[in-house]
Amino acid sequence: AAAATNLGAADVPHHKLEAHLGDTLAAARERKERVLPTALNLPVEGKDFDAAAFYDQVYGTNCENVVGFLPLPVGVIGPLVVNDRPFTVPLATTEGALVASANRGARAIREAGGATSRVLRDGMTRSPVLAFEGVSEAADFAAWVAAPEHLDRLQAWFATTTS
Image (cartoon, rainbow, N blue to C red; front, side):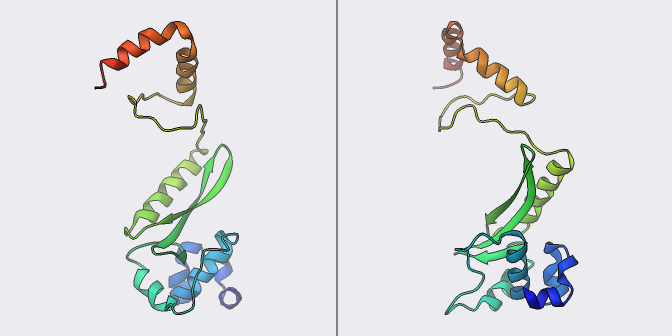
């Protein structure tokens, strides 16, 4: 990445590094150093692997903002702001434009003030889906459901929607 910085890449947005540097491998190295430096087990290149040819093949077709490889190219989006904390989110995909699309969503969320998330219970279920206007309404409903006197009514209603 030092060579890229010497070429003035430090001020270039990370999603424009390939065009600025003219080298897809150097762009992946620079991007990883900038946005995902703690991902030590995510290789950018490897022994017996033609990383430059791989990044040339992936660039502009399968994944944006590449920072390394697994059996799939890994791109990043973000920052995605959730509960006032910014996250850089890696996505492994070969679907062209998926990372760019998710990144636009992350930008929209960020520009709207971020997303709010609350975990009421961690687990997996196969139950009816309920939709609410926002987190507060969902939390209010969860509190209502927790009251034992509502259980019979709720079970009867759900029984009408599931087999």
